[in-house]
Amino acid sequence: MIKQVINGKNARTVNANMSSADFTTLSAVLAGECTEWELHSEGGSAATVPFLNFIKFSTGKATISNRYCQVTNVPHVKVSKTLSDIRTAVIGSFDQDYISSTKCDYCNGVGMKSGSN
Image (tube, rainbow, N blue to C red; front, side):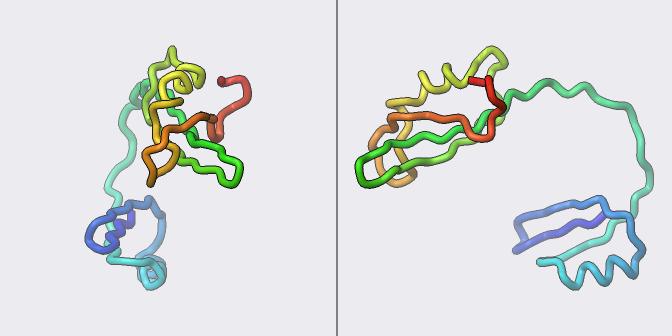
C-alpha cells in the first residue's frame, strides 16, 4: 500500500501490489511524500452497508444575457425523497450562484438515471 501526503494535509492511500523497486520508481513521479506500507493480511467478514440515496443537482437563475448556477452534492437523502421533493425545498431558497444572494428559479438533477425525478 502507498500512503501519499500532499502539502501535509491531503493523505491518500492506494492499494498497489508491487515490489520495493517498483515503488521507488513510482514514488519519483508522485506528488508529495510517499510511504510504502506492507500488507500483512486480507479478509474479514463482509459488512452490510446501508443504501445511500446520494443526489447531485444544479440550481440557478436564467436571465436574458447570462445563466448563473451552482452544483450541490448531498450524500445522504431520505430514501423516500425524490428530485421533485428537492426542487420544492430549494427553488426560491438556494442562491443562484456562489457569489450573489439572488435566489434560484430552477433545480435540475445532475448525472441521474432517467426516471428518477
